[in-house]
Image (cartoon, rainbow, N blue to C red):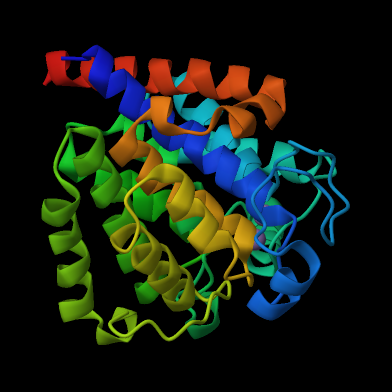
Length: 298
Ligand code: MN
Ligand code: MN
């Protein structure tokens, strides 16, 4: 059933994601000490950064998620070619930024029509993991669909075991939190990830926050485990610098699912590009409704 609480957690995940992207983009590729020198604590959505963004503008993380969500809603289900085509339309829209691995994969699809990239060691960036939230919502009650859709959309650009494991783990964690599991229960999924792939271990936290999926996941898990509210989780994440828009977005996804939309600071929601807010409000509700309609069919 789609309860009010469920809706608030799902919307919290999606808006939290976008807030993390917009907040983190200002300090993307900076080191913690550079951030400290320039901002003290970076805590407001002010734009700028290496992309010279307007305050509230989001980047590829949110835009690719919205493209994936639009493809699912347009098809009212899963159609991988539609997903790839929506990514290409986004690529042609002159986006503010795009990761190299994403670009390479989308250009391969355009040139060959091939939907799956070969397995590659150098595809262990966070670009597939960062855009999977619409799948998380649309498959909320369907573990098999969640795995299949997640891996298929990932492999358009990133076909790598560490990327796959992280995408599934963060997605499942988000699903559990939206369904009301405690943070402690949910963190057992990350313990499983670490048992299967010890490189993800973040005890002690190594302090790297690059776009390498291992660094990204460690940063996000360390932040959510060691904070007790939405705002401090995101501040801890983005002030670590590195790929701060993406770590911020993924931390915002987990923290938003856990704490709910009501715990996102009002100043961040007010700063966010309102056309993005509207799209997210629509998608989060419609993706949940789609997930529920599958439950009735099955
Ligand atoms: Mn980005
Ligand atoms: Mn990034």
